[in-house]
Image 1: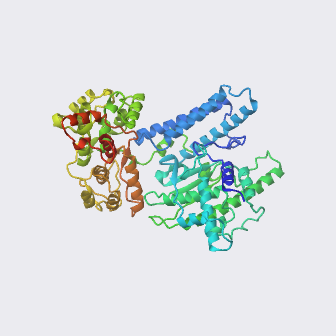
Image 2: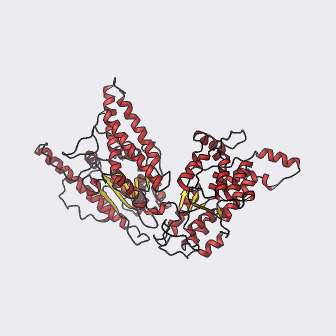
Length: 639
Protein backbone atom coordinates (compact mmCIF):
# COMPACT_ATOMS: atom_id res chain seq x y z
CA UNK A 1 0.00 0.00 0.00
CA UNK A 2 1.26 3.44 -0.87
CA UNK A 3 2.33 5.36 2.24
CA UNK A 4 0.57 8.57 3.23
CA UNK A 5 3.75 10.58 2.67
CA UNK A 6 4.30 9.18 -0.82
CA UNK A 7 0.67 9.71 -1.68
CA UNK A 8 0.88 13.28 -0.42
CA UNK A 9 3.88 13.91 -2.64
CA UNK A 10 2.03 12.46 -5.61
CA UNK A 11 -1.05 14.58 -4.95
CA UNK A 12 1.03 17.73 -4.62
CA UNK A 13 2.89 16.93 -7.84
CA UNK A 14 -0.19 15.99 -9.82
CA UNK A 15 -2.34 18.91 -8.74
CA UNK A 16 -0.64 21.96 -10.18
CA UNK A 17 -2.58 24.70 -8.49
CA UNK A 18 -2.08 28.43 -8.79
CA UNK A 19 -2.22 29.49 -5.16
CA UNK A 20 -1.61 33.21 -5.69
CA UNK A 21 1.94 32.87 -4.52
CA UNK A 22 2.58 29.18 -5.20
CA UNK A 23 4.48 27.93 -8.24
CA UNK A 24 2.60 26.18 -11.01
CA UNK A 25 4.43 23.15 -12.30
CA UNK A 26 5.57 23.86 -15.87
CA UNK A 27 4.56 21.52 -18.63
CA UNK A 28 6.23 23.30 -21.49
CA UNK A 29 3.32 25.50 -22.49
CA UNK A 30 1.26 28.39 -21.28
CA UNK A 31 -1.70 27.39 -19.12
CA UNK A 32 -4.14 29.68 -20.86
CA UNK A 33 -5.71 29.04 -24.23
CA UNK A 34 -6.59 31.53 -26.90
CA UNK A 35 -9.00 31.28 -29.75
CA UNK A 36 -7.75 31.30 -33.32
CA UNK A 37 -8.89 34.88 -33.63
CA UNK A 38 -7.09 36.02 -30.51
CA UNK A 39 -3.63 37.50 -30.49
CA UNK A 40 -1.08 35.18 -28.93
CA UNK A 41 0.75 36.68 -25.92
CA UNK A 42 4.37 37.72 -26.34
CA UNK A 43 6.38 34.97 -24.61
CA UNK A 44 9.79 36.47 -25.35
CA UNK A 45 11.83 37.56 -22.31
CA UNK A 46 11.18 41.23 -23.07
CA UNK A 47 7.49 40.52 -23.65
CA UNK A 48 7.21 38.69 -20.33
CA UNK A 49 8.79 41.63 -18.51
CA UNK A 50 6.29 44.02 -20.11
CA UNK A 51 3.36 41.75 -19.20
CA UNK A 52 4.57 41.53 -15.59
CA UNK A 53 4.68 45.33 -15.44
CA UNK A 54 1.07 45.59 -16.65
CA UNK A 55 -0.16 42.94 -14.19
CA UNK A 56 1.62 44.52 -11.21
CA UNK A 57 0.37 47.99 -12.18
CA UNK A 58 -3.24 46.75 -12.20
CA UNK A 59 -2.90 45.10 -8.79
CA UNK A 60 -1.34 48.27 -7.39
CA UNK A 61 -4.25 50.23 -8.86
CA UNK A 62 -6.56 47.86 -6.99
CA UNK A 63 -4.62 48.50 -3.78
CA UNK A 64 -4.92 52.26 -4.32
CA UNK A 65 -8.65 51.91 -4.98
CA UNK A 66 -9.04 50.06 -1.67
CA UNK A 67 -7.14 52.77 0.16
CA UNK A 68 -9.31 55.52 -1.34
CA UNK A 69 -12.66 53.76 -1.57
CA UNK A 70 -12.65 51.65 1.60
CA UNK A 71 -10.08 53.70 3.55
CA UNK A 72 -8.33 50.57 4.79
CA UNK A 73 -4.63 50.57 3.85
CA UNK A 74 -3.90 46.90 4.56
CA UNK A 75 -6.55 44.78 2.85
CA UNK A 76 -6.03 41.07 3.64
CA UNK A 77 -3.55 39.44 1.27
CA UNK A 78 -3.23 42.26 -1.28
CA UNK A 79 0.09 43.73 -0.20
CA UNK A 80 1.68 40.30 0.25
CA UNK A 81 0.49 39.19 -3.16
CA UNK A 82 1.91 42.29 -4.85
CA UNK A 83 5.26 41.63 -3.13
CA UNK A 84 5.17 38.08 -4.50
CA UNK A 85 4.47 39.40 -8.01
CA UNK A 86 7.48 41.71 -7.78
CA UNK A 87 9.67 38.76 -6.76
CA UNK A 88 8.42 36.68 -9.71
CA UNK A 89 8.96 39.61 -12.08
CA UNK A 90 12.57 39.98 -10.93
CA UNK A 91 13.21 36.35 -11.92
CA UNK A 92 11.95 37.11 -15.42
CA UNK A 93 14.02 40.30 -15.59
CA UNK A 94 17.14 38.24 -14.91
CA UNK A 95 16.25 35.98 -17.83
CA UNK A 96 15.72 39.02 -20.05
CA UNK A 97 19.15 40.28 -18.97
CA UNK A 98 20.77 37.07 -20.26
CA UNK A 99 20.83 34.74 -17.27
CA UNK A 100 21.82 31.11 -18.00
CA UNK A 101 22.84 31.86 -21.59
CA UNK A 102 25.79 29.50 -21.16
CA UNK A 103 23.37 26.74 -20.02
CA UNK A 104 20.82 26.39 -22.85
CA UNK A 105 18.89 23.50 -21.29
CA UNK A 106 18.48 25.28 -17.96
CA UNK A 107 17.50 28.51 -19.68
CA UNK A 108 14.78 26.71 -21.66
CA UNK A 109 13.43 25.23 -18.44
CA UNK A 110 13.46 28.61 -16.70
CA UNK A 111 11.70 30.21 -19.66
CA UNK A 112 8.96 27.56 -19.62
CA UNK A 113 8.51 28.15 -15.91
CA UNK A 114 8.38 31.92 -16.42
CA UNK A 115 5.75 31.59 -19.18
CA UNK A 116 3.46 29.26 -17.21
CA UNK A 117 3.80 31.21 -13.98
CA UNK A 118 2.92 34.54 -15.59
CA UNK A 119 0.06 33.05 -17.60
CA UNK A 120 -1.38 31.54 -14.42
CA UNK A 121 -1.17 34.84 -12.56
CA UNK A 122 -2.78 36.68 -15.49
CA UNK A 123 -5.56 34.10 -15.61
CA UNK A 124 -6.15 34.43 -11.89
CA UNK A 125 -6.40 38.22 -12.14
CA UNK A 126 -8.80 37.93 -15.08
CA UNK A 127 -11.06 35.69 -12.99
CA UNK A 128 -10.89 38.01 -9.97
CA UNK A 129 -11.82 41.01 -12.12
CA UNK A 130 -15.11 39.31 -13.03
CA UNK A 131 -16.10 39.28 -9.33
CA UNK A 132 -17.56 41.82 -6.95
CA UNK A 133 -16.73 42.73 -3.37
CA UNK A 134 -13.27 41.21 -2.89
CA UNK A 135 -12.69 40.74 0.85
CA UNK A 136 -9.32 38.92 0.83
CA UNK A 137 -6.69 37.25 -1.33
CA UNK A 138 -4.64 34.20 -0.37
CA UNK A 139 -6.81 33.27 2.60
CA UNK A 140 -6.71 30.09 4.67
CA UNK A 141 -9.74 28.92 6.64
CA UNK A 142 -9.43 26.44 9.52
CA UNK A 143 -11.20 23.11 9.40
CA UNK A 144 -12.89 21.51 12.42
CA UNK A 145 -10.73 19.01 14.25
CA UNK A 146 -11.75 15.32 13.91
CA UNK A 147 -13.47 13.79 16.90
CA UNK A 148 -11.43 11.85 19.46
CA UNK A 149 -13.11 8.58 18.46
CA UNK A 150 -12.14 9.10 14.83
CA UNK A 151 -8.55 9.93 15.77
CA UNK A 152 -8.34 6.89 18.03
CA UNK A 153 -9.72 4.67 15.28
CA UNK A 154 -7.10 5.97 12.86
CA UNK A 155 -4.25 5.34 15.29
CA UNK A 156 -5.32 1.79 16.14
CA UNK A 157 -4.53 0.33 12.72
CA UNK A 158 -6.74 -1.49 10.19
CA UNK A 159 -9.42 -3.65 11.90
CA UNK A 160 -10.99 -6.65 10.22
CA UNK A 161 -12.96 -5.91 7.07
CA UNK A 162 -16.73 -5.93 7.28
CA UNK A 163 -16.86 -4.67 10.87
CA UNK A 164 -18.11 -1.28 12.12
CA UNK A 165 -14.60 -0.62 13.44
CA UNK A 166 -13.26 -0.99 9.89
CA UNK A 167 -15.70 1.68 8.70
CA UNK A 168 -14.50 4.08 11.41
CA UNK A 169 -10.88 3.37 10.55
CA UNK A 170 -11.44 4.09 6.85
CA UNK A 171 -13.20 7.36 7.72
CA UNK A 172 -10.36 8.40 10.01
CA UNK A 173 -7.77 7.56 7.35
CA UNK A 174 -9.60 9.68 4.81
CA UNK A 175 -9.73 12.62 7.20
CA UNK A 176 -6.03 12.25 7.92
CA UNK A 177 -5.19 12.22 4.20
CA UNK A 178 -7.31 15.29 3.61
CA UNK A 179 -5.40 17.09 6.33
CA UNK A 180 -2.10 15.99 4.86
CA UNK A 181 -3.14 17.53 1.54
CA UNK A 182 -3.08 20.93 3.26
CA UNK A 183 0.62 21.54 2.67
CA UNK A 184 2.05 24.91 1.71
CA UNK A 185 3.84 24.44 -1.60
CA UNK A 186 6.08 27.43 -1.10
CA UNK A 187 7.47 26.41 2.30
CA UNK A 188 6.66 22.74 2.68
CA UNK A 189 5.16 23.38 6.12
CA UNK A 190 1.98 21.85 7.50
CA UNK A 191 -0.91 24.30 7.57
CA UNK A 192 -4.03 24.52 9.65
CA UNK A 193 -6.58 25.51 7.03
CA UNK A 194 -7.86 25.25 3.51
CA UNK A 195 -6.49 27.70 0.96
CA UNK A 196 -8.73 29.83 -1.25
CA UNK A 197 -7.45 32.24 -3.89
CA UNK A 198 -10.03 34.93 -3.22
CA UNK A 199 -12.93 35.68 -0.91
CA UNK A 200 -15.50 37.55 -3.01
CA UNK A 201 -19.15 38.66 -3.01
CA UNK A 202 -18.46 40.57 0.23
CA UNK A 203 -17.39 37.36 1.94
CA UNK A 204 -20.23 35.16 0.71
CA UNK A 205 -18.21 33.21 -1.88
CA UNK A 206 -14.85 31.41 -1.93
CA UNK A 207 -12.95 31.01 -5.18
CA UNK A 208 -10.29 28.38 -5.77
CA UNK A 209 -8.55 28.30 -9.16
CA UNK A 210 -6.71 25.12 -10.19
CA UNK A 211 -4.52 24.57 -13.23
CA UNK A 212 -4.65 20.80 -13.52
CA UNK A 213 -4.54 19.75 -17.19
CA UNK A 214 -6.45 16.96 -18.92
CA UNK A 215 -3.23 14.95 -19.21
CA UNK A 216 -2.46 15.27 -15.49
CA UNK A 217 -5.96 14.23 -14.51
CA UNK A 218 -5.96 11.22 -16.87
CA UNK A 219 -2.72 9.95 -15.31
CA UNK A 220 -4.16 10.30 -11.82
CA UNK A 221 -7.36 8.55 -12.88
CA UNK A 222 -5.32 5.63 -14.20
CA UNK A 223 -3.28 5.44 -11.00
CA UNK A 224 -6.48 5.22 -8.97
CA UNK A 225 -8.02 2.40 -11.01
CA UNK A 226 -10.55 4.36 -13.04
CA UNK A 227 -12.96 2.16 -15.03
CA UNK A 228 -12.50 3.26 -18.63
CA UNK A 229 -15.02 2.93 -21.42
CA UNK A 230 -18.28 2.87 -19.48
CA UNK A 231 -21.17 4.21 -21.49
CA UNK A 232 -22.66 7.55 -20.51
CA UNK A 233 -25.06 7.09 -17.60
CA UNK A 234 -23.82 3.62 -16.58
CA UNK A 235 -22.56 4.90 -13.22
CA UNK A 236 -25.44 7.31 -12.63
CA UNK A 237 -26.98 4.82 -10.21
CA UNK A 238 -24.16 5.63 -7.78
CA UNK A 239 -25.91 8.22 -5.69
CA UNK A 240 -24.95 10.02 -2.51
CA UNK A 241 -21.56 9.35 -1.01
CA UNK A 242 -21.32 6.16 -3.10
CA UNK A 243 -20.34 8.34 -6.06
CA UNK A 244 -17.10 9.23 -4.23
CA UNK A 245 -16.36 5.78 -2.84
CA UNK A 246 -13.85 4.69 -5.50
CA UNK A 247 -12.34 8.14 -6.16
CA UNK A 248 -11.95 9.39 -2.58
CA UNK A 249 -8.14 9.33 -2.86
CA UNK A 250 -8.01 11.62 -5.88
CA UNK A 251 -6.70 15.11 -5.36
CA UNK A 252 -9.74 17.07 -6.57
CA UNK A 253 -12.03 15.12 -4.23
CA UNK A 254 -9.66 15.55 -1.29
CA UNK A 255 -9.48 19.29 -1.94
CA UNK A 256 -13.24 19.74 -2.40
CA UNK A 257 -14.11 17.78 0.74
CA UNK A 258 -11.64 19.89 2.70
CA UNK A 259 -13.26 23.07 1.42
CA UNK A 260 -16.69 21.75 2.42
CA UNK A 261 -15.42 21.09 5.95
CA UNK A 262 -13.85 24.55 6.13
CA UNK A 263 -17.01 26.26 4.83
CA UNK A 264 -19.09 24.41 7.41
CA UNK A 265 -16.77 25.72 10.15
CA UNK A 266 -16.49 29.30 8.82
CA UNK A 267 -19.93 30.74 8.22
CA UNK A 268 -20.39 34.34 7.12
CA UNK A 269 -23.00 36.00 9.35
CA UNK A 270 -24.27 32.51 10.07
CA UNK A 271 -24.60 31.57 6.37
CA UNK A 272 -22.45 29.09 4.44
CA UNK A 273 -20.11 30.62 1.86
CA UNK A 274 -20.61 29.31 -1.66
CA UNK A 275 -17.58 27.43 -3.01
CA UNK A 276 -16.41 27.82 -6.62
CA UNK A 277 -13.64 25.56 -7.96
CA UNK A 278 -12.48 26.73 -11.40
CA UNK A 279 -10.49 24.24 -13.50
CA UNK A 280 -9.04 26.72 -15.97
CA UNK A 281 -7.03 24.17 -18.01
CA UNK A 282 -9.38 21.19 -18.00
CA UNK A 283 -11.79 20.50 -20.88
CA UNK A 284 -14.88 18.29 -20.85
CA UNK A 285 -15.39 18.78 -24.60
CA UNK A 286 -13.05 18.92 -27.58
CA UNK A 287 -13.05 21.58 -30.28
CA UNK A 288 -11.99 20.44 -33.77
CA UNK A 289 -10.07 23.34 -35.32
CA UNK A 290 -9.13 21.30 -38.41
CA UNK A 291 -5.41 21.07 -37.58
CA UNK A 292 -5.51 17.57 -36.02
CA UNK A 293 -6.07 14.25 -37.74
CA UNK A 294 -9.37 12.43 -37.37
CA UNK A 295 -7.67 9.80 -35.21
CA UNK A 296 -6.31 12.45 -32.83
CA UNK A 297 -9.70 14.13 -32.64
CA UNK A 298 -11.41 10.84 -31.77
CA UNK A 299 -8.81 10.14 -29.10
CA UNK A 300 -9.33 13.56 -27.54
CA UNK A 301 -13.09 13.08 -27.63
CA UNK A 302 -12.73 9.81 -25.72
CA UNK A 303 -10.43 11.45 -23.15
CA UNK A 304 -12.81 14.38 -22.68
CA UNK A 305 -15.74 11.99 -22.31
CA UNK A 306 -13.93 10.18 -19.48
CA UNK A 307 -13.08 13.49 -17.81
CA UNK A 308 -16.69 14.64 -18.11
CA UNK A 309 -17.87 11.36 -16.55
CA UNK A 310 -15.33 11.74 -13.73
CA UNK A 311 -16.35 15.34 -13.02
CA UNK A 312 -20.00 14.29 -13.09
CA UNK A 313 -19.33 11.71 -10.37
CA UNK A 314 -17.43 14.29 -8.34
CA UNK A 315 -20.24 16.84 -8.61
CA UNK A 316 -22.91 14.30 -7.60
CA UNK A 317 -20.87 13.07 -4.66
CA UNK A 318 -20.01 16.54 -3.39
CA UNK A 319 -23.62 17.68 -3.65
CA UNK A 320 -24.68 14.67 -1.58
CA UNK A 321 -21.92 15.26 0.97
CA UNK A 322 -22.91 18.93 1.34
CA UNK A 323 -26.57 17.92 1.74
CA UNK A 324 -25.62 15.86 4.81
CA UNK A 325 -24.63 19.04 6.65
CA UNK A 326 -27.31 20.85 8.66
CA UNK A 327 -28.76 23.97 7.02
CA UNK A 328 -27.27 27.32 7.92
CA UNK A 329 -28.90 30.08 9.92
CA UNK A 330 -31.04 31.06 6.90
CA UNK A 331 -32.12 27.42 6.40
CA UNK A 332 -29.98 27.10 3.24
CA UNK A 333 -27.70 24.22 2.27
CA UNK A 334 -24.01 24.53 1.50
CA UNK A 335 -23.36 24.83 -2.24
CA UNK A 336 -20.20 23.84 -4.12
CA UNK A 337 -19.72 24.25 -7.87
CA UNK A 338 -16.97 22.88 -10.13
CA UNK A 339 -16.46 24.64 -13.47
CA UNK A 340 -14.18 23.40 -16.24
CA UNK A 341 -12.37 25.55 -18.80
CA UNK A 342 -15.28 26.13 -21.20
CA UNK A 343 -17.96 26.81 -18.59
CA UNK A 344 -19.38 30.37 -18.63
CA UNK A 345 -18.17 30.98 -15.06
CA UNK A 346 -14.58 30.25 -16.12
CA UNK A 347 -14.63 32.03 -19.48
CA UNK A 348 -16.39 35.18 -18.23
CA UNK A 349 -14.52 38.31 -19.28
CA UNK A 350 -13.95 41.28 -16.96
CA UNK A 351 -15.06 44.79 -17.94
CA UNK A 352 -12.65 46.22 -20.53
CA UNK A 353 -12.33 49.44 -18.53
CA UNK A 354 -10.02 48.77 -15.56
CA UNK A 355 -11.61 51.51 -13.46
CA UNK A 356 -15.04 49.91 -13.88
CA UNK A 357 -13.62 46.54 -12.84
CA UNK A 358 -11.86 48.03 -9.82
CA UNK A 359 -15.03 49.79 -8.70
CA UNK A 360 -16.88 46.46 -8.77
CA UNK A 361 -14.11 44.80 -6.75
CA UNK A 362 -14.52 47.20 -3.82
CA UNK A 363 -16.46 45.81 -0.84
CA UNK A 364 -19.79 47.38 0.03
CA UNK A 365 -20.19 50.60 2.00
CA UNK A 366 -20.62 48.87 5.36
CA UNK A 367 -16.83 48.52 5.55
CA UNK A 368 -16.24 52.26 5.32
CA UNK A 369 -15.56 54.76 8.05
CA UNK A 370 -18.50 56.55 9.64
CA UNK A 371 -18.57 60.35 10.10
CA UNK A 372 -18.04 59.83 13.85
CA UNK A 373 -15.18 57.57 14.92
CA UNK A 374 -14.91 55.74 18.23
CA UNK A 375 -11.25 55.89 19.34
CA UNK A 376 -9.73 53.00 21.28
CA UNK A 377 -7.14 53.47 24.05
CA UNK A 378 -4.49 51.92 21.80
CA UNK A 379 -4.99 54.66 19.20
CA UNK A 380 -4.83 57.39 21.85
CA UNK A 381 -1.51 55.91 23.00
CA UNK A 382 -0.23 55.81 19.40
CA UNK A 383 -1.13 59.47 18.82
CA UNK A 384 0.49 60.49 22.11
CA UNK A 385 3.71 58.47 21.86
CA UNK A 386 7.10 60.13 21.35
CA UNK A 387 7.93 57.19 19.08
CA UNK A 388 5.13 58.22 16.70
CA UNK A 389 5.87 61.94 16.84
CA UNK A 390 9.67 62.20 16.97
CA UNK A 391 13.00 60.43 16.66
CA UNK A 392 13.67 58.42 19.83
CA UNK A 393 17.06 57.08 20.85
CA UNK A 394 17.22 53.43 21.89
CA UNK A 395 18.21 52.97 25.54
CA UNK A 396 19.74 49.90 27.14
CA UNK A 397 16.76 49.56 29.49
CA UNK A 398 14.15 49.64 26.71
CA UNK A 399 12.17 46.39 26.36
CA UNK A 400 12.58 44.64 23.02
CA UNK A 401 9.06 45.60 21.88
CA UNK A 402 9.90 49.29 22.23
CA UNK A 403 13.26 48.84 20.50
CA UNK A 404 11.44 47.20 17.60
CA UNK A 405 8.94 50.08 17.37
CA UNK A 406 11.72 52.70 17.45
CA UNK A 407 13.66 50.84 14.76
CA UNK A 408 10.64 50.52 12.49
CA UNK A 409 9.72 54.19 12.92
CA UNK A 410 13.28 55.23 12.04
CA UNK A 411 12.97 53.41 8.70
CA UNK A 412 9.80 55.39 7.85
CA UNK A 413 9.71 58.56 9.96
CA UNK A 414 6.20 59.81 10.57
CA UNK A 415 4.68 56.96 8.57
CA UNK A 416 2.30 55.73 11.27
CA UNK A 417 1.06 59.25 12.08
CA UNK A 418 0.48 60.08 8.40
CA UNK A 419 -1.30 56.80 7.77
CA UNK A 420 -3.67 57.28 10.70
CA UNK A 421 -4.46 60.86 9.75
CA UNK A 422 -4.90 60.36 6.01
CA UNK A 423 -6.60 56.96 6.06
CA UNK A 424 -8.93 57.40 9.02
CA UNK A 425 -8.99 60.40 11.35
CA UNK A 426 -9.03 63.60 9.33
CA UNK A 427 -12.33 65.37 8.86
CA UNK A 428 -14.27 63.14 11.26
CA UNK A 429 -15.68 63.72 14.71
CA UNK A 430 -13.65 61.78 17.30
CA UNK A 431 -15.15 60.27 20.45
CA UNK A 432 -14.08 57.74 23.07
CA UNK A 433 -15.67 56.06 26.08
CA UNK A 434 -15.12 57.18 29.63
CA UNK A 435 -13.38 53.88 30.40
CA UNK A 436 -10.99 54.23 27.44
CA UNK A 437 -10.07 57.77 28.47
CA UNK A 438 -9.50 56.75 32.08
CA UNK A 439 -7.21 53.85 31.11
CA UNK A 440 -5.34 56.24 28.83
CA UNK A 441 -4.87 58.82 31.60
CA UNK A 442 -3.59 56.21 34.06
CA UNK A 443 -0.93 55.02 31.65
CA UNK A 444 0.15 58.48 30.52
CA UNK A 445 0.39 60.14 33.93
CA UNK A 446 1.90 57.04 35.52
CA UNK A 447 4.83 56.46 33.18
CA UNK A 448 4.91 58.75 30.14
CA UNK A 449 7.48 61.38 29.27
CA UNK A 450 6.52 65.07 29.88
CA UNK A 451 6.10 65.61 26.12
CA UNK A 452 3.68 62.69 25.95
CA UNK A 453 1.69 64.02 28.91
CA UNK A 454 1.38 67.36 27.13
CA UNK A 455 0.11 65.65 23.96
CA UNK A 456 -2.44 63.76 26.05
CA UNK A 457 -3.80 67.04 27.43
CA UNK A 458 -4.04 68.37 23.86
CA UNK A 459 -5.83 65.29 22.50
CA UNK A 460 -8.46 65.26 25.26
CA UNK A 461 -8.59 69.04 25.76
CA UNK A 462 -7.88 68.71 29.48
CA UNK A 463 -5.78 70.49 32.10
CA UNK A 464 -4.53 73.83 30.85
CA UNK A 465 -6.01 72.97 27.42
CA UNK A 466 -9.57 72.73 28.73
CA UNK A 467 -11.88 74.97 26.72
CA UNK A 468 -9.35 75.59 23.92
CA UNK A 469 -10.80 75.76 20.41
CA UNK A 470 -10.06 73.18 17.73
CA UNK A 471 -7.48 75.21 15.78
CA UNK A 472 -5.54 76.05 18.95
CA UNK A 473 -5.32 72.36 19.85
CA UNK A 474 -4.27 71.38 16.31
CA UNK A 475 -1.55 74.04 16.28
CA UNK A 476 -0.24 72.91 19.66
CA UNK A 477 -0.25 69.27 18.54
CA UNK A 478 1.85 70.27 15.54
CA UNK A 479 4.32 72.07 17.81
CA UNK A 480 4.72 68.85 19.80
CA UNK A 481 5.40 66.72 16.71
CA UNK A 482 8.47 66.46 14.51
CA UNK A 483 6.07 65.89 11.59
CA UNK A 484 3.69 68.90 11.64
CA UNK A 485 2.89 68.41 7.95
CA UNK A 486 1.34 65.03 8.82
CA UNK A 487 -1.31 66.68 11.01
CA UNK A 488 -4.15 67.99 8.80
CA UNK A 489 -6.05 71.23 9.32
CA UNK A 490 -9.34 69.34 9.57
CA UNK A 491 -8.32 67.13 12.51
CA UNK A 492 -11.28 67.34 14.90
CA UNK A 493 -9.71 67.94 18.32
CA UNK A 494 -10.38 67.40 21.12
CA UNK A 495 -11.51 63.79 21.32
CA UNK A 496 -14.92 63.97 22.99
CA UNK A 497 -15.18 61.70 26.05
CA UNK A 498 -18.54 59.95 26.52
CA UNK A 499 -19.93 60.79 29.95
CA UNK A 500 -22.12 57.70 30.35
CA UNK A 501 -20.35 54.64 31.81
CA UNK A 502 -20.17 51.71 29.41
CA UNK A 503 -19.69 48.69 31.60
CA UNK A 504 -21.39 45.32 31.40
CA UNK A 505 -24.59 46.66 33.00
CA UNK A 506 -25.02 49.27 30.26
CA UNK A 507 -24.34 46.72 27.54
CA UNK A 508 -27.00 44.41 28.98
CA UNK A 509 -29.52 47.23 29.26
CA UNK A 510 -29.32 48.17 25.56
CA UNK A 511 -28.99 44.62 24.15
CA UNK A 512 -32.01 43.55 22.15
CA UNK A 513 -33.06 47.11 21.33
CA UNK A 514 -31.57 47.00 17.82
CA UNK A 515 -33.82 45.70 15.07
CA UNK A 516 -32.52 42.65 13.25
CA UNK A 517 -32.25 44.50 9.96
CA UNK A 518 -30.44 47.54 11.37
CA UNK A 519 -27.64 48.26 8.94
CA UNK A 520 -24.92 50.75 9.94
CA UNK A 521 -23.92 52.71 6.84
CA UNK A 522 -22.59 56.12 5.97
CA UNK A 523 -26.04 57.24 4.89
CA UNK A 524 -27.58 56.37 8.24
CA UNK A 525 -27.95 59.34 10.64
CA UNK A 526 -26.46 59.11 14.15
CA UNK A 527 -28.59 57.15 16.57
CA UNK A 528 -30.48 59.18 19.16
CA UNK A 529 -29.90 56.39 21.67
CA UNK A 530 -27.65 53.31 21.80
CA UNK A 531 -29.02 49.92 20.76
CA UNK A 532 -27.46 46.48 20.35
CA UNK A 533 -28.77 43.21 18.88
CA UNK A 534 -29.81 40.60 21.42
CA UNK A 535 -26.74 38.48 20.68
CA UNK A 536 -24.49 41.24 22.09
CA UNK A 537 -25.29 40.34 25.69
CA UNK A 538 -24.14 36.76 25.15
CA UNK A 539 -20.92 37.92 23.51
CA UNK A 540 -20.17 40.41 26.29
CA UNK A 541 -20.66 37.75 28.96
CA UNK A 542 -18.39 35.28 27.17
CA UNK A 543 -15.65 37.82 26.52
CA UNK A 544 -15.38 38.61 30.25
CA UNK A 545 -12.84 41.27 29.32
CA UNK A 546 -11.54 44.41 30.98
CA UNK A 547 -13.78 47.48 31.10
CA UNK A 548 -11.85 49.46 28.44
CA UNK A 549 -12.06 46.65 25.88
CA UNK A 550 -15.74 45.90 26.44
CA UNK A 551 -16.75 49.54 26.64
CA UNK A 552 -14.88 50.60 23.50
CA UNK A 553 -16.13 47.92 21.12
CA UNK A 554 -19.70 47.68 22.39
CA UNK A 555 -20.17 51.45 22.54
CA UNK A 556 -19.12 51.76 18.89
CA UNK A 557 -21.37 48.85 17.97
CA UNK A 558 -24.36 50.32 19.82
CA UNK A 559 -23.94 53.79 18.31
CA UNK A 560 -23.13 52.55 14.77
CA UNK A 561 -19.73 54.28 14.95
CA UNK A 562 -16.63 52.77 13.36
CA UNK A 563 -14.20 51.81 16.13
CA UNK A 564 -10.54 52.61 15.39
CA UNK A 565 -8.16 50.25 17.18
CA UNK A 566 -4.93 48.28 17.00
CA UNK A 567 -6.51 45.43 18.99
CA UNK A 568 -6.89 42.86 16.22
CA UNK A 569 -7.29 40.02 18.73
CA UNK A 570 -10.38 41.60 20.29
CA UNK A 571 -11.90 42.26 16.85
CA UNK A 572 -11.37 38.64 15.83
CA UNK A 573 -12.78 37.34 19.09
CA UNK A 574 -15.96 39.39 18.75
CA UNK A 575 -16.35 38.17 15.16
CA UNK A 576 -15.95 34.51 16.18
CA UNK A 577 -18.42 34.81 19.05
CA UNK A 578 -20.92 36.62 16.83
CA UNK A 579 -20.73 33.83 14.25
CA UNK A 580 -21.22 31.25 17.00
CA UNK A 581 -24.24 32.84 18.68
CA UNK A 582 -26.04 34.91 16.06
CA UNK A 583 -29.67 34.05 15.38
CA UNK A 584 -29.95 35.64 11.93
CA UNK A 585 -27.62 36.60 9.10
CA UNK A 586 -29.28 40.03 9.23
CA UNK A 587 -27.59 40.79 12.55
CA UNK A 588 -24.81 43.16 11.60
CA UNK A 589 -21.24 43.02 12.81
CA UNK A 590 -19.75 46.02 14.60
CA UNK A 591 -17.78 48.36 12.34
CA UNK A 592 -14.10 48.02 13.28
CA UNK A 593 -11.11 49.58 11.49
CA UNK A 594 -7.83 47.97 12.55
CA UNK A 595 -4.55 49.88 12.41
CA UNK A 596 -1.94 47.17 11.90
CA UNK A 597 0.88 49.13 13.55
CA UNK A 598 0.78 49.71 17.30
CA UNK A 599 2.93 52.16 19.24
CA UNK A 600 3.65 52.23 22.97
CA UNK A 601 4.60 55.14 25.18
CA UNK A 602 8.25 56.12 25.41
CA UNK A 603 7.98 55.49 29.14
CA UNK A 604 10.44 56.74 31.70
CA UNK A 605 13.15 54.44 33.02
CA UNK A 606 11.46 52.34 35.74
CA UNK A 607 14.81 51.93 37.53
CA UNK A 608 15.08 55.70 38.04
CA UNK A 609 11.66 55.81 39.61
CA UNK A 610 12.44 52.84 41.82
CA UNK A 611 15.62 54.49 43.13
CA UNK A 612 13.77 57.74 43.86
CA UNK A 613 11.02 55.93 45.76
CA UNK A 614 13.52 53.92 47.79
CA UNK A 615 15.24 57.16 48.81
CA UNK A 616 11.91 58.45 50.06
CA UNK A 617 11.07 55.14 51.73
CA UNK A 618 8.11 54.56 49.38
CA UNK A 619 6.83 51.36 47.85
CA UNK A 620 3.98 52.74 45.84
CA UNK A 621 1.73 50.51 43.73
CA UNK A 622 3.10 52.09 40.56
CA UNK A 623 6.44 50.38 41.09
CA UNK A 624 5.21 46.95 42.05
CA UNK A 625 5.21 44.17 39.53
CA UNK A 626 1.78 42.91 38.52
CA UNK A 627 1.54 39.24 37.59
CA UNK A 628 5.27 39.13 37.07
CA UNK A 629 5.32 42.04 34.61
CA UNK A 630 6.77 45.50 34.95
CA UNK A 631 4.26 48.38 35.07
CA UNK A 632 5.10 49.48 31.53
CA UNK A 633 4.53 45.97 30.20
CA UNK A 634 1.24 45.65 32.06
CA UNK A 635 0.04 48.96 30.65
CA UNK A 636 0.93 47.88 27.13
CA UNK A 637 -1.17 44.76 27.57
CA UNK A 638 -4.14 46.80 28.82
CA UNK A 639 -3.90 49.07 25.78
